Length: 631
Image 1 (spheres, rainbow, N blue to C red):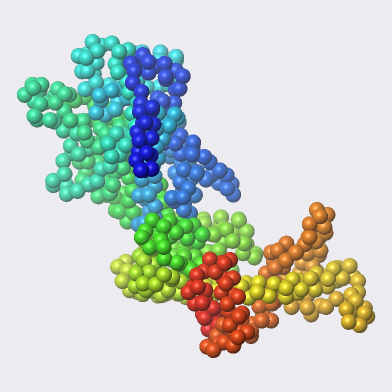
Image 2 (image 1 turned 180 degrees about the horizontal axis):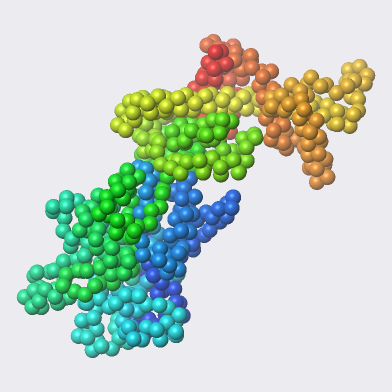
């Protein structure tokens, strides 16, 4: 019964939020809370801003879009800063249709859906509250009741500018129901809802021959003509078009560029003047954000048609490219899988990451610099440190191609292949190799992939496979090394003793004979070479280690195995190199002896407990790494 209790609580909250009063009462609210009279564009901007903003690497990240859109921070920052923010300040940008342009499955529809759902929730908050003339099918702004000749006085007193005129229906109601007394007109608080067609609308074009303009602007109710005597009587008109119903909020214009011209011309007046023509009435004012989305091919075709020049100047285009960060692409897949019925299937660690690597590689343009390959570029874009490169290099690469991210493999294709793998195998676990195999098989079935592209994508699958091989070996390496925890600790202590003696130009004492000996250069180099420390750089690295030990000592802390990431990596690799034969024999033996079986069980247990594998995927990993080491 808990769900029914929640429904009841929600109903009670709805009742508490409701408000009704006269226009005179409303003016008191406006005086105290002027934001209730904000425009639709301003409301959208404040909704996004109120959700929180954080600075990350010199860029603004808007929390409103978190957990839904991944890897689009730059595009979203541009959208907010170049469209929503100036629109909220009443600059001319607000008189433009917002057109989101990008590849399929790039997040355009999700973005629009987030704005819709966000407005619905925001209208239920204090800062997002909206009031309208009661009984108005277009939920008209109450301030339209203020006569034109008094609007400058109103601005002087309230600091609010009024745009738009009273609709024909409310003009008649003011005279007939309220005898011209605007102070008595009833006002109510409204809550935006796409389902109830309050402040949020969606228009989707269909067959131009059968679709009526009334879908946008409303229509005459012929059943009332006899009652009201004229088609020009506003009471005989249904203000139920999408432009009517989306007033005070947002209207999504789906497939706008495929729409018949007669529907688009209504947008010219609406965007530039804030009104549109309907029936036999004067222009009807509307305050709404028009947002459309399209792909690049359709957009290029649209602007090449000279007949569309007038509308083109009323559009502001915002590119929404594919995400180009591996870690963010992983989150997209995780989100899509969690929303499906296969979320209970075990997906081995790194599976989605490897799939994301392949996807990102298909979206990247070939680097123009000779010292950067696709893999380095992918890592740099993902925020990884790549020796010899910095942030400035990344910014330079991003400027090389204006259309990077506008093509490549889309997330839906990858999820389809992952789903196919899960369903086909009918096992409770899949790994990276399963998914790479499925991605490769699916290239032949992809309708838009040419033979040339197929060869290119097959190469990217090979690159992703090589990356996985390194990840798999490192994963097993860690599991084996940690099984020899004491060996790792002993090796590190031995290394540190030698480093200390080397830096202090001191001798060491042989534990067996007691005689003085020089630091073991061979041991130190065998460890340092594992992480690429050159002969020239060894002195600086050793001094850095000694400084770190001293810093820990001053703070009363003990320098241990986890205190220096690069040293830990070097120790792990050294141990793994020393144990390579043991690992090879242990992982690839078809009939392991008792000692080998014990080691396998230890490693499997560690892979399960600490790295997120299950029994099946852990054993698959060990077998695969065994085969790699035997090649």
